[in-house]
Image (cartoon, rainbow, N blue to C red):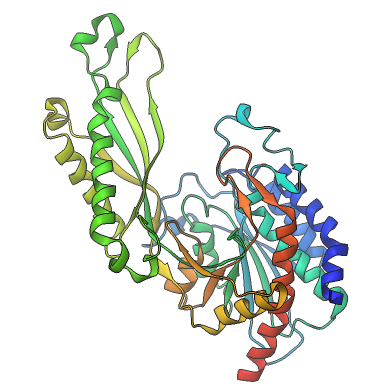
Length: 424
């Protein structure tokens, strides 16, 4: 065991305490500030200068932005900056998102979702896995390097904690538009200690099905939109099947190893307010993973056509077709070249720490890496701990994997700056 590995073990309890504090701070959408301030204090303790970067309302007009669910007043990205000691070393951006998804029903959890609990080496809590564990891993590595190798940071280092990664990506986009960039980016997403290099295109769509409201006793003269939505569900099922049959595998080599990368998820269904009343409308929240060649608007049209075809035999839907609107993600497909020096450097660091080369993987989902690669010309990848039940009940992170990931980072970070200086 090296001196750095010993330092990681010594500082691990501090990292786990930070993670507990972050999980304890409910950072669902619109409530991000408390967790950001926990992270700000930890970064200041490591000598970072803190900036609270406002998100302009105008970001919604950006052609690649998601559709915001809330105004941005009093909401911000957290930026921590620390200057390097060298003159020609490259800069690095460490990215993570502070927002977490809502808890649908806390009653199913074995412990309250915002009260971090450790059992059998796993820390449970909403956001423990996705992705507050990444901040704990990153700061653990920086603390150990500072203690063992003062002056290791030859180039500038920025730690960025963004909002709305889980629904629009506008936090990362706004930071990039404001100039919070670097020569490369590492996103501390949970990846099972694998190198995550690619993600599919995604849109969120809200589908509204009209009904004819009335008393349950007179349901024969009413039209229940919940039942009418059957045609919507069938259309979405057919669209998913068609996308994966026509576009998977050879259609996009980056996702050739994923059997069905283009998933359609019905994540929300809202209708009605009274058991004895026929509802007036049903609103369906849908997430569509789609081929890269389709824009968000074209995907919306593909959904409309699929539902229209599936419901052609329904007299009500033919005369009262559903309405559609984009309401969140408009995320582009992205893919990092596996041969890029950044990928090779992280892979070598992982191999030095763990004795084997990590696999490079793609996902049928997305990360904020898409902006760095597609809009800002920066190499980017994601690397982080082992987790389970992301977005679900009893979400958790394996605590030892936080240390394992930090073992890779303490080898990667100095090497990244040294290699950059040599190229310069």
